[in-house]
Image (cartoon, rainbow, N blue to C red; front, side, top):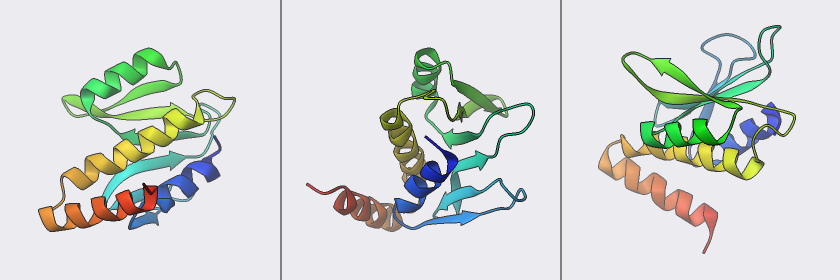
Length: 128
């Protein structure tokens, strides 16, 4: 999956905004004012990558399943994953699921009324 496809998937989720607080070519995707995904363009030291929010137990499982998935540490425990993009490093379906999970993680922490409204919108978007 390309960075453009990741951005398209993220922006297709309900009420997602894109910002570049960390500079050009480093967009972040937010819902309810909180980041759930961050893109970083390739450099001489790493390929294109996306970092997504993730529940710790699922993160461990995903790291074991995919060599292109690595933990991104923050503080004493980690709840973010970095996924290297390109060259079919991870199936598109798995990366799509990871983006949806990241969005869900942030939505779960929002106030109840906002959370329910967003989940309803997401459910309607996915269809029956």
